[in-house]
View (cartoon, rainbow, N blue to C red):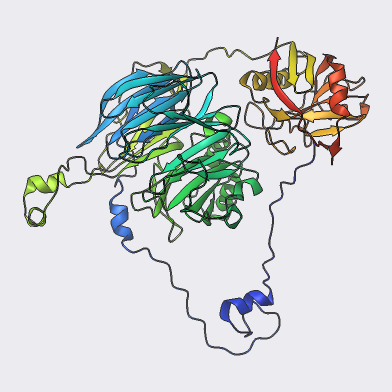
Length: 626
């Protein structure tokens, strides 16, 4: 496996002469020049950037930094959705349950619960008008809900596992449209959102090259921004030719949308600002929050939330809050847990109603970041015992009805003043928690009553009653490739973790449509990288796992081993040897041997290559486990 270069690019602190002259338009000396300096007047102090009406914007957020109430699902929560205009909070959990909560004058009220899916909910979406809601499940179904009547309207039965759903019609449209992406293919299907037709009205087949993991619709531009598992971001209009609209950038090369590909990272969350002028992303594994201008696709800000930066700030004492070593170690361990595939796509960022503030979870609590001054202005949940994951914000006036005239506003009618009162709520889920937590204006909170037991307890303490996990394993596999089938015998006793990793990935379809990206004659063929360039892929645990050396050696051809970038760096990539390779012993974990389809292995081995990569893609279509 090619060694990956993980060193951060560094820039010299020295600036060139051209940079100086660009800044002040002259060749005058400066403090940064080498050698003696000419006498000069003191440079004026740089003015601190100030956001007009910052205090007003902050006052529209919840006052209390401690949560005032928490409510339950039976299982861990996955998604929070605050519907625009209709003012509903919709929560979902890993067991396929969806709950509707209505925002009222003081807090929220439970409305209805659905067992929407048999198994995990993979994606949810609410329409721009707040009237339609959709969920996508691992059970190959899409459920369509009417938010106002909190009723299940229709079910779409699919022949594939959906990866992402997104409503793609404008406010007030008479025909709702829903975009659905596939888990293992790059196709995007457009469905009639009324559910009257089980077949898509259109399929976008060649926009992306990898499965599409995120889609967000911008009502103001009538445009969808989508991203795939390869880190590519695209714009498209959900009508007509389904191509990039004319009201955004002309050439993608003028944008910064290739940032994720350059950073070898994938967006796991995309959120639009309320006016649609900007969008914010979170990506992994670089853990950076990026702020883009929507129309130009230009990058405006980047905020680094990586563990490396967290550790550096803790050591330097520049963090918002200094933690003792034990507590800091505990929180960093929890940060690493978020990098697992099951959690990182639940980590999101949201805007406040002004679009000037970003709100997101961190190891210190929920940060409110002023994007104009680049300062954290508030932290919620600093003293609470959970790590915030998904967040949603409501800032409306739930009692306000009708139009307020100037005369009415000028009056001192107490009923009118009460109806104008805001009741902002910040809602958050926590890592490994079955609860969602609400931060409000209520500052006097009783710790003994704020955690409501609205579900029959199914947990002991904060941990689920211990259940024996069934470890995925097998003794044989058939790799179906575009060149034919390869039959493999697996050795779970000699390499249990490597086999479990390979079997689980295979059953989940992780290897489907990946290519053999590295082929060397009289040596080996290598695959298992979803990025297709030898730099990607991860284990089922979301981290590298240790080597498992045994009596099995690379003493014969057709040995199946884990590819790595050094000791204990196993991920998802594997290779099959075509000769004896004894120099690989005790460097790569042997977990199988090919027993049939040896001619297929040699056919792949002898394929035409350029720089070790086959000129024609040779794909793994699927892998069956026995």
